[in-house]
Amino acid sequence: MRAITWPAKNAHLLRAISNPRGLYESPDGDTYAHIADEGYFRVDRQADGRYRMHWPEGLGEAGPLLTQVEGQAYWRPAPSARPVPAAVSVETAANPSPPRPLPADQAAWLTNAQTTWDGMRYDKRKATYVDMEDGTTFMVRKHPEGGYQQASAHERNSLGARVEQIPGSKRWRTRPDDEQLPGPSKRARLSAPQQPTLARPSSGLTPDAQPSTGAWRSWGKTSKPEWNDSIEIDGLHYVIVPQRMQADTLLVYLENPLFTPGRYDAFEQMLQTDLSLQPKWAVKTNDAWAIVEQRPFEGSLTGYVGKTFLDLSQQSSNAIARTVFNQANHSEVINGDGLRILFDTLYHWENRTTSTAPRPELADPLLLLPILPAQPSVDLLGHNLVLPLPSGEAFQRLDFDTSRFHQQWRDALDTPGASLRAMFSDLLEHSGYTVDRTSRMFSEDALIFKRENLDAVFVLRFRPSAADGTLYRAVDPASELNGEGFRKRLETSKWRQMLEPGKVVYLVGGTQPVSAQQTLLFIVREG
Figure (cartoon, one colour):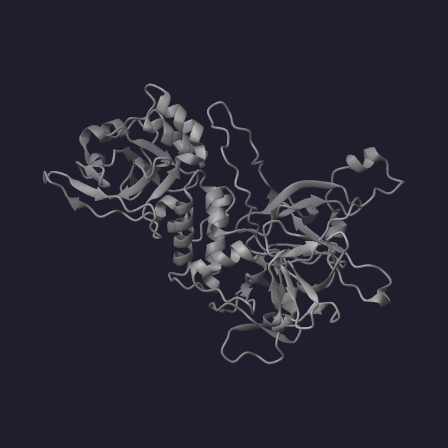
């Protein structure tokens, strides 16, 4: 392997080749490709312009062809077609029988689910199994989009339902179908961000896994680092991102020698340019540490936010991602505990029905909005709110960008009687909120909405902003809750259990033109 790989510790000696990206020239003039999650491998350029991994002549065959990962500065082996054996009919290959649970007597020979943090069990071949919520045991394999699905030990093409771990349990369950078509009351999806889903780390090997030659193996040192936290694997010491280490710690982050996690901008830039530089998961199983080959993130933090909260402006997505990053461990410099909170927060936003937020204030982006301070008004009866600039780095306002749903916005402007309330209702439902379109319990035509499994209710009032960005507020937003008339109406409302002090988040929404081509629909928080 030393004849075809470049040591990670000497990566600084390689000179980047501008085109195509992900190729490097060594001091000896050889060309190396950065293989995702593996390291730097020597390659040879073919007559047709493609690149093939350099294979020593003694192996008697050519190395595999490589293909550049679209939009990324690294490469991977080109996919090769696998022919269906002649003995297998086309019908059988296309329609294999569904996977069946493992017989109980065979399941008894698997490792104990209690010895792994995610409940995964293994046979002597290191094939992976999970216990379902009904007590049956299924073999599972990794799904191309992340996570796991049921599989057959006898038919490679036999794949079943996708499964997920039950929060707080060692057992697993079938994932709910999340690919529903929009109904008559729902808008069709306007833009589908091409962002992979997040998947929790697995402590096991896939059935076809071989001993890893991942680049992380070259990160180990024979002596324990004096000034850094570390873990030991196979007699070598690996630096980890600093975090609190306790006897029951089961997850840490292995630090790539070429990138030290610190502040948000550098971390986000790394995810946008070279995902292989991010820290790797390490999990403890049976008192031994093992590296998880899958990456924690397969895209940028901004992309994950934009996928979860649709139609946001790019600036809002970036501001939310920055806020979650900084609040993860209450510092602008992230550590291992913060990385776990960061991942768990974004994972919860993608999987609200099957996971819990790591902290209550991180359960929803709207809960992260700060309450804008009240400013004196001219009439002294009410007060003003000053809209923060939409270009600010801090998350102080949430903006929907009308250019992302241009036709719907134009239709609303051209339709007599169209209301801002209806437009916000569409946007909020599009982002997964449950909206009460009919209730008129509050003043200013306020909209009441909530998020499933969130112990809070949002009250959104509408107010046009002045040219100088001020919003006039006549009354204290919470004063209505204490009114006798309101309390009487509340007795017969479906919201009576939610509209209680401490559970209500008060918001103000409106429009703000920022250019001739762009108008923002904003939401800010008042108190």
